[in-house]
Every structure is written in structure tokens, then in C-alpha cells.
Image 1 (cartoon, rainbow, N blue to C red):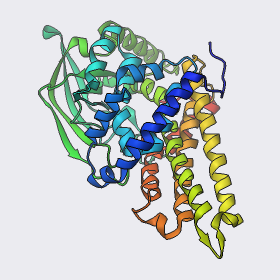
Image 2: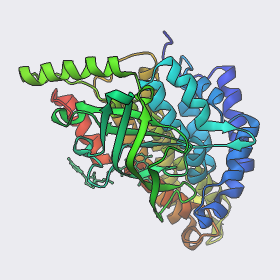
Image 3: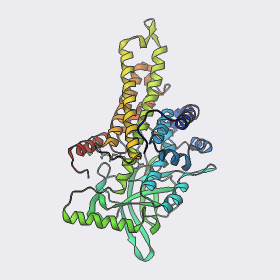
Image 4: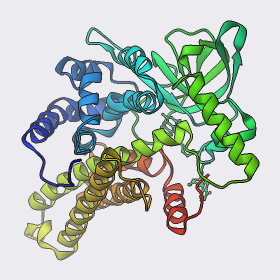
Length: 409
Ligand SMILES: Cc1cc2nc3c(=O)[nH]c(=O)nc-3n(C[C@H](O)[C@H](O)[C@H](O)COP(=O)(O)OP(=O)(O)OC[C@H]3O[C@@H](n4cnc5c(N)ncnc54)[C@H](O)[C@@H]3O)c2cc1C
């Protein structure tokens, strides 16, 4: 088992520098254009595919890095480039993680390659959990999956919302209710293969930030998928449901992880790393600006009011990164999150990103407030980190309940 270390090995440094180069030379120059267009930056995704960044191989290599630092290092660099474009590149990963966390080897081998497509025909995937009446309260989900035993098919009905890549994805991973009596323990995840009849895109949202990333409703009307599309398989589901029913009958409070929670647990430190990337981008920009912008005959960084802000920004970014790396290392090396360390990392990093990007605007003065400079976009983008994958309030709730030894439903 890998010991926790902050020293990246030579391979990790090489990957970090390579990704930084891509973020600086390809992502950042395209950021303003795709933010204005509010469209998926397909040409940039294709560039990422050409060099091997948008691929199952690359994602799996980072995901299975035994130190746990592969994913956070990659996310920080890509999101340093631009959050909207980077989310378009890594959004497929959330669906892929859903399959990796809950799927059989066969499902992983069949569906994840289809999520990415190939260099000449890139595809994206979507993970659909949230619903209009089930955001933070995942347990109130209504999308229903009913098993048609005669045909060995599952029939899905419901409306999903806020799905990154929803409707434009080749493969959708959909979380649905299989046993309404069991609340969140009665959920299961399904693959909806490409071009399945009955799945349509609803409203596409016009957003405050990460505008290069497509977010939309996904409507499911009598969507039939083969039995093999149930992630983990029917036998495992039946066993899990039987255990939950037993516990419900006995009135036991023991927690049983549902499929969607497993995805979120694995992905929270990764979202923290995205936030660190955006925060660092704004800090880097503000630092250079403060060193060169002169007022009253000297660079503005000569004023303690500006210098101390930069000192705080950098300190908080480094602290956020440490929390993220710790959580990723723990998750990868199988250490239990005794104090909700995954949630801690996401909470602190996302709040830091929101704060630091706001400070960057202040340091740039009037320029910071315009779209001629990137920090206002970074500030708009940073707002998402305190909302998706569990809001800051929900992270606090998870941390507090964990500390108190109370169940998290
Ligand atoms: C751009 C974007 C992309 C997204 N991508 C995806 C995706 O790919 N797949 C997916 O499934 N979902 C996705 N989401 C959904 C996201 O995870 C939800 O928006 C989020 O979980 C919050 O749910 P909600 O929007 O319904 O807010 P609500 O749950 O309605 O919350 C509203 C407010 O109430 C607070 N609140 C709620 N309950 C409590 C409580 N018990 N205690 C204290 N405060 C509380 C919240 O913190 C928040 O401030 C995305 C969202 C956005 C905006």
C-alpha cells in the first residue's frame, strides 16, 4: 500500500507537465470563445483525444495510480486551463466512474470504450442522477426501473435534470428506483446504450459559468434496456435489496451504500481538485498582474493590502490541495473516510475557489470586471464547485453527521 507522500514521482511529474502544456496551449486560448458560444467544444475534445488525454487509457491510468494522486493532479492542471472546456473533457469520466464503481468487468469493457468513441469520432457520456424534485435529497428520486422478466429487459420512466452531456451523450448512466419501499437503498444504476428509443434531451440550460459544458434535462419514456445493462447484474442487486429489506424489517440503522452514493464518494476529491485548478489559475493571473500593474509610482503588490490577499489566496489553495490529496490517497489505498475526509476536501476546495477568484477580480480592479481578462470567467465558473456533487451545505451535513456518529441517509 502506498504511503502518503507529497513528492510526485517522475512519471507523475511528466504527466503533470504534459497536461499543463495542453491546458496552456490548447485549452486556455479557446476558453473565452467557447464560454461565449455556450456550446460543447468538440474540436478541443478531439485535440485532447488526438494526444491521448481524452481516452479510457489515460483516465484508467490516472484512476488506478496506486498513490491516489493521478486524478487530482490531472484535474488540477486541466481545470487550470479552463473549467468549462475541462469539464467537457472529463465529464465523461463521471459516467465512467459510475460503471467502474458498480459494473462487472464485462460491463466495464463493453461500455466505457463506447463512452469515449475514437479520435475520428469522439463521443461523450452522461451520469444522470439528479431530478427536478431530487437534488440534494437523492432519496426522493422518482425515475422508475421495472423489470420485464419475460423479455429480460428493464423499462425506465422519469425525468432527469442537470445532466452534464445529457442528451448529447452516446452512453447515459441512469440511476433509478427499483424498490420504492427502500428509499435511497432501493436505487440501481443502468446503462442506456446509444440511440435507445425513448430517451430524449429536454431543456438545455443557459448557465452562469462553465458555459462550454453542456447541461440538460434527460427525459425517459418507456426506455427499454437489456437485463445486462443493470450495473453489477441482477444477482448482486437482488442480494443487496434482500439485505436492505432485512435491515429495514429489523429496524437496523446500519448504513448501506447505494450506487449513486458510491459514485459521489469516489468523485468528491476529484471535484475538489478541479476547484484547486480554477483557484490556482485566478491566483497565478492576479499575482502576475499585481507585480506589473503600477499605481502611485509602484507595483500594486508593494501595498500590504494586496500582498496579504495574495498570501492568503496561496495559503488556502495549498491547504485545499493537501486535503484533496489526502482524501484521494485514502480512497485509493482503501482507508475508510472516518471523518468524511472526501467531503472535507470538496467543501474546502470549492469554497476556496469561490473566494480566491473573487479576490482576483478585486486585485485586477476594473480590468478584473471585464471579459477582456479571464478572472471574471473563472469567478463565474468557480460558483459551480459549491453546488454540484453535493452542495457545501450537504458536505457540512455529511461531515457533521459523520463526526457525530449519526447515519447519513
Ligand atoms: C452545471 C451543473 C452540472 C451538473 N451535473 C450533474 C450531472 O452530471 N449529473 C447529475 O446527476 N447531477 C448534476 N448536477 C446536479 C447537482 O448535483 C445538483 O444541482 C445538486 O446536487 C443540488 O441539487 P439542487 O440543484 O436540486 O438543489 P437543492 O437540493 O434544491 O438545494 C437548494 C439549496 O438548499 C440547500 N439544502 C438542501 N438540503 C439541505 C439540508 N438538508 N440542509 C441544509 N441545506 C440544504 C442546498 O445546499 C442549496 O443551497 C449538476 C448541476 C449543475 C448546476
